[in-house]
Amino acid sequence: MAILEVKALTVARGSRPLVSDLSFTLAAGEVLHLRGSNGVGKTSLLEVLSGLRSPVEGTITPQPEGGRLHWLGHKNALNLALTPIENLEFWCGLNGRAAGGLVPVLEQLGVAKVRHRACRTLSAGQKRRSALARLLLDQRPLWLLDEPLDGLDAQGLELFASLLKAHLDKGGAAIITSHQPLPAGVPGVRELQLS
Ligand SMILES: Nc1ncnc2c1ncn2[C@@H]1O[C@H](COP(=O)(O)OP(=O)(O)OP(=O)(O)O)[C@@H](O)[C@H]1O
Image (tube, rainbow, N blue to C red; front, side, top):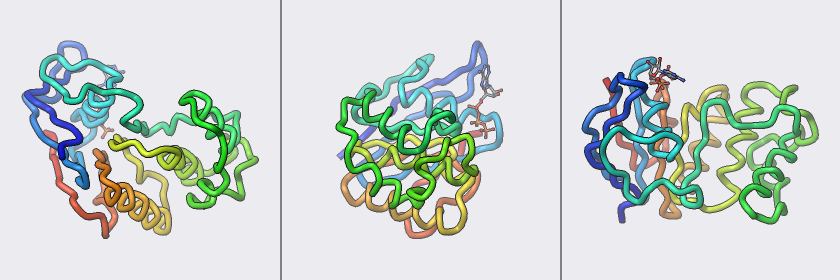
């Protein structure tokens, strides 16, 4: 089953085309690993796929819609004045979800111990784990993740792989930018090299 179908997509910044005539299909259980050098357009492409910016040409089916995709940008989208648990509560409020069961989610991500500290006082890896926790708050079929591995230690990489694998096993799919190889043990990974 196709989770996403992209046809003849052109993405630009201003008048400068970054990605031209890109077509691909993403099925349930698949991961597309976006690779390419700095500035080639990986983040810009993800932003278009998430609906944050418009393509110059081409179609995305179904059209980006918040309820069926999770966007996680490389800046984490955490309010640094709030704690990890307050950030999750805020996210729940925004998305009309009851704010229960948040501590087990933070435990799963290994940041329950710091859940009452302002995010500005957390390490890069602790912030990343706190942001990744949002992925587990509901079951959205498509994860669009920009550099999600940055800041994760070896155990964090293993944890990420297990979360991603569980997501794929449930029929989800993901598009992930990363300059490093995705952790071992994730099935269904295809690479898309932008140039
Ligand atoms: N806000 C912006 N305004 C104008 N141009 C931008 C802006 N953000 C990025 N760009 C330009 O768009 C191009 C693509 O940037 P993008 O962030 O998509 O690349 P990337 O492949 O994700 O890079 P990296 O590997 O460094 O994260 C770059 O040439 C960059 O200079």
